[in-house]
Length: 432
Image (tube, helix red, strand yellow):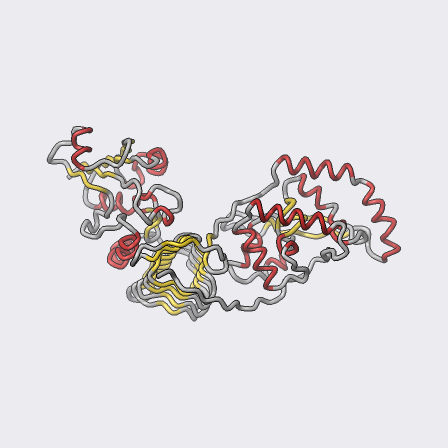
């Protein structure tokens, strides 16, 4: 067979939340997009060209495939008004009766194993296909019989892994975590200390909190599906289950930057007041500091210098930070600035979410009642805000920050080292 025809599934109940907002065939499956595995299987089988009939965002498929040269295939994507049946596809596109055409809800490597039919098959099929798909992936290795790990995984020596088990590329497994049997953790996911995964799939870039038990479920971001009965729930407690994809904000929007510039001009007398108050309050006029900035995955810590006016009271001392908003390095609302030494004290992947947003003049931990030195509660608020920087939360931070300018209980302007963390103790159950 030199030419293969596949009908891409449009939607399947219970799967939309677990493919990262992508077309189903581009959802991550054992370390690579499902379609990647399928085309690799076609190439190995000697197929020379493939035609995909897709109704769900065919342009995205074309962009991903780029003609199919990566698999040594000629791949064409045909846009259809809806998901076609086999008979309808043959009639509409004059496909010969001897030509192969089938729904792309399974892989050519094992056509008898359904996958893209629902959450149950999306999960259960992995145990059968893991020995077939894992060995062909670059960097994947079998660290114990039936236990596979991808590239750059970080697995605690105290973690317990039970076959069959897959740990995706760049995933992290914390201390005393228990995975398996039939635990499948996709790329860039984070399993915190003492968490448990049994007969479940944890989606890409998903955080599973400490002491959380995931059983008979498929979890992606905050979406949790019990694959055995189809029940679904979306968790609002990011300590337990959440997405690790905060929006990157390398700079404030132009409007906010112009507002900061206007505030600098209007409040120019403040440095003069600081100069007059410095000898009276026996504090320095100016203090230079460093702040770690958000960085792309794989980059080291980037920092920038900024200053404050310690002689001014409370939040007023942050007046020089307005200039960093103008330059696009700070934001009006964010997390407290940390220097590189303080940033290195953030131990877990969850805590390091603190650094995924730009430093802010008004900060999430302070809006929630925390003050320096930053303890576990402050770290948690900073990480959660970085994961879900909603408009409502920003508005609350800004409101409380503005009130702090006239409040007697003003936040401390001093840079403080975060306190050592304490392990939380929350243990929810998956939906039944």
